[in-house]
Length: 418
Image (tube, rainbow, N blue to C red; front, top):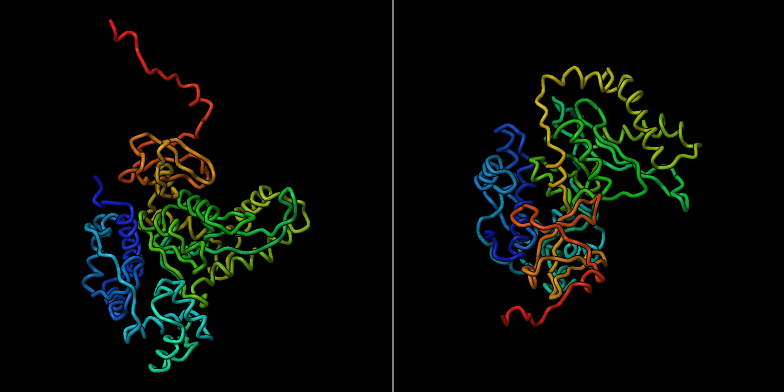
């Protein structure tokens, strides 16, 4: 039996666990003094948890989450008991901090946009109060729109391999996809210390499948990073990336919206790609497969082997020189695949079927009427499994109407008469 009595409680527990992981990601690999400074600032703020609402926490509470995570990993920070349902947020004096935080993150210039952002980010629901009530509250509390904090930008570099990976997408040249010419996107991950490109993939889409593929390949090739740094684009804030990071013990860190500082190394790499690699392939009639092959060759023979201006040596030379002195944490491929499985919820119908992406699949009759947790690899969405207690227990089969129609049906057995 699961410790959560239903799917909704399990989802709420997962939201709480991911929120806690987001907090401790900021201090997971920091020294005690730095931890205390960061956590004290976090304790002064009110935090919003999806499905629970806005709450404040003490430094000791944050540290208890960190200790629980270090001892039990992702499952260690999941709540052990059901959390009461959060009530709707009423507008009052405490709401000032939430609004100021939002105004610092996004350059909001109209009351309507602020009201819409509060709803979209889950701070309020449409019926909590009207736009006019919000405007009156802002004026009464002397809150002006478009307040933004100026953050000084300083250069930095981590001291070891795999301490910090930085990831982003780059929009680039058009290629023929078999039907028409389409823009391409490069997803790349750079190791902050060595400037080695740990993962890269060209595709016609900027989506989770490409990001997941690149991230997994990078981990298999170079080991697990401590921190994974990216911006606030939807593809990076998805649960499909946050949950694997939490399970793997990777601190997922997002840059502040509209403030790209900290991602300068990956942006500098993209400029190198545009100036040094793109001219060599721009006029060639490449397929996306050929582009990827040519790019990997360029990375291996040119970028990794040439002297990097910021390092004073080739990225691969620095990596190889320091590789033996650093503990590289490897993750088996089968374990990594399982961690990155996508998760969906479905209720099994009376005919033992569930519908997924317009297709029907058969499930065991014992699940009739129950909502089940289904997981599948993004690369093979037809390989769908029922999961219980984080383990696959049954592989769904596509519905075969003809086979089911040929099943013999016996209503009376003459053998029972003798």
